[in-house]
Length: 382
Ligand code: AMP
Ligand code: FES
Ligand code: ZN
Ligand code: ZN
Image (cartoon, rainbow, N blue to C red):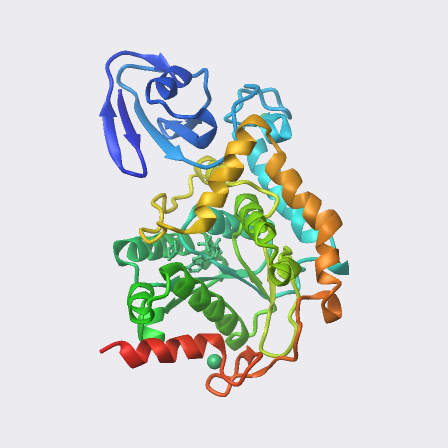
């Protein structure tokens, strides 16, 4: 059989037939960290693979193995989640994911829904599994939701991500009158993530994060959207929480919530409808729905502490399924208010915001952090 592996990309040719479990064991892979796809279908541990099978193994970072039958219809399951002590067939797994998104949208944290059918919604799509799946699910759930792709200039990785977003938009969004905005950082603002990082000596992720947050809000404000949606999932949020708790960053903890209301003019509400779903669930959603996404990681990810925190949590999750969700949901249900309550309005705004002298977007000083970073970069770039 021909086995395609990712990160790094490689192909193994193996003689003879074997089960998925045997194959993973032979390749020394932890079954809870990968999805196995054969003949375009997600397959589970007990599935037999023929000698001439074409197999793809995709890394995902959570989950585990469990019962093989769908909890709803008893048909053979394509995915098992020990955290939910459940397994699902394809269609019921899609229902499960969309149900968790529905629950996140409607649960009225801070007294209101994340958004309603009247709102104009903008989702930030990176081409990765989470945000593309989220756009797909929100369209299915009947919301009016446009997309925004930010070109960060990270070589082939960025161009491949853009193509994925454009192809998804052409297939799923545009026929419904929904639009994909594309903003290229270099064209619009004169620098890319790598050149900005070299010019300032700042880590690429720092330059990248600040630029993205700015462009997200800017496009949402300029085009009159009510709410900005991102694809941060359970793994992202739990890792961020762990990082904030380890360093006791009270200020960040006060803003760590799935809904952040706008605190002034030129700011839109920010929401994270995937915070109840793991990376593995989102990757599986894409496979089950036949959605193409960028499997490769950003090449600049090395040294990103968020990645190490995710690995630490996965180590715990491996022996205690569900511990990651307990950590995050326990904080949100019982402790987030403690930190938020220290802020006027309970929304994380410690100081009055005013308009940036350069761009007019909200800031605490005279010139916003984005404009200051951009000035420093453009002063150095040829
Ligand atoms: P990350 O910060 O890469 O973990 O991404 C978190 C979320 O930010 C994603 O789920 C997307 O919603 C959004 N995002 C990340 N990169 C981009 C991008 N280049 N363009 C648009 N949205 C992005
Ligand atoms: Fe940090 Fe890509 S810039 S992961
Ligand atoms: Zn089923
Ligand atoms: Zn500014």
